[in-house]
Image (cartoon, rainbow, N blue to C red; front, top):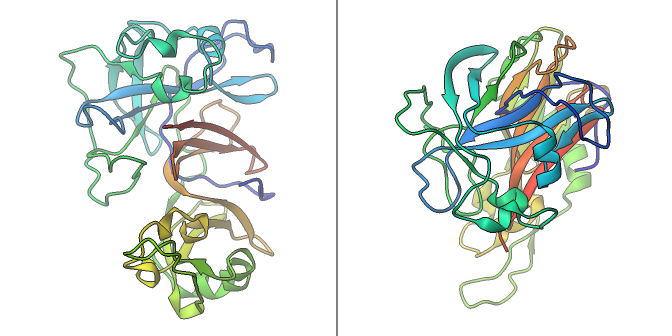
Length: 310
């Protein structure tokens, strides 16, 4: 996940923009954007909606709001109204409740390991806002597949997609292009354990077993492609897909292509700090770990807001 390509691209994203006044060690200037998401929670009542405030921009870059001190510095407060965005367009608004959730008091404490897991901000009751059905069953996490797609929230004007990212249709030529690099990353695949709990060993694969899962490109010609080994190769073996080698691997199609990351699904893209370049927000999910990853500055930089369940 530390292999960041030189060029820029954007994937899945849900984003919220807030204004930072002061308080970060990084000394942000006034009116610094903050990124958040409107989503179904992974546990509890998974049909309701919550807000997670994820990242704030400072003078050193995007900072994950991973503890109470950082969240308070972002000046996020109860009653704040956010603009809901999708694909660079405003599609609605939503208002949040107090940022001190009552159901999990531990989230009030500073620097606790479960702060990012439990900091789920409630939205005000009796609101009408747009939702998008998760018909493709993407954004699966540790506990569930959300009924609705996560959506980006912003409280300022920065939401457009200046690079005009669009989906790329599946094409086997991308698999051929990326296969040798993928093979360097994934030589063989662990099958986990069999029905009786015995280690099932490893399975080999060839190019015909690799599939393109998703892809996006922008008007400047930058393309990102996600590929993986067909899950049918591991069918019937418990736990095989918890191994990162089975996950989708994302590549930026440069010369040569470069690995962007694993365990990722694109949420949305937008220019959330008005610098003329797109930020890409991805959903991240691995074993016992969910969250969001933000790629920016032409994919040279990355910020992660992840949480563990136990």
